[in-house]
Image 1 (tube, one colour):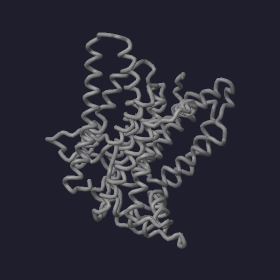
Image 2 (cartoon, one colour):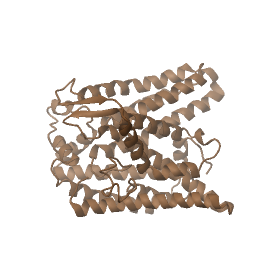
Image 3 (cartoon, one colour):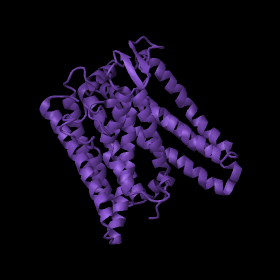
Image 4 (tube, helix red, strand yellow):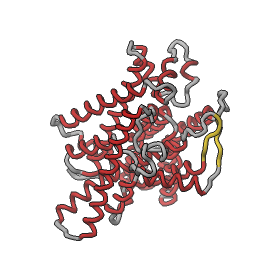
Length: 415
């Protein structure tokens, strides 16, 4: 199969494979069963994220729309859980089931992206996707023995149900935005100044962005400015193609409006609430944000060095992800919550989702690059050292993820 940088086109080609994929089915069943167990176990802890959000979902009354619209800031997980609960499933099991389904959907999308990026066998991609569902920041016993707590972040999380839905939306949005650019490039070659997207794609993009915001606005806090910079630079490069860029703006307008509404809800402007947002940066907040990213994404950052080649940034998914990393770091540095949400770390979520997207892209790139390196038969020891260090870091991250889950189950700590 000839590979394309366009993830949607490549995914369509992969969809033509008709053979039954039993390893993916097995991995999905394991992830589904284990996630169901973990989230049902977590539901026993009062005042944790899962417990709080499940209670909110349990209060939804579909005959009283106000009970739903009052939670307009991020209703998707709550709506799904409420529907399952109304169908007769006990609230605890309903919340665990929705979380497990989101985790499984995330693994499926990661597997698909790994295939698109790496071009290696689908079984290898299934194993890698399965492992990525457990990856955490590296555990440094002298610094973060509880893995998550001291760092305040992880590419994957096991305690926040709404974040699971955000991950699914991210794995849909970023590839489709890249597809919208590659589609423009293809049309530019034939249509010149008249090049634009089919309006169906503009509508799909707008719906995906709104879906992500309905899950939780945290990922969009990084994506909106990242896309703003990306498309502005491209507009400067293609000043005669304003039709296309106005289409992109139109796709983002509903999302930006909804995002602003969510912010007003969150800060208590629309509905009463005792939290606010403080703005400012210190040397400590800057260092903590960068340190957390280094711990969360040690492997993918090194993989960028291992896999570097001329033209690497032609991959627009990677460019968008790096921009998301940058803006999420700035957000973590500059924004802090006040009031009841002081210390909740909600301005760190964007860095976690961005780190996971970098994990997916660079794991695929690493698999592809390492495979080509082995086939080349080169004896360059510097390359062996780089790839060896990358493998060690990957195993360290996965081992830290296993240790973290063991810590949760044996310590009775929900975080």
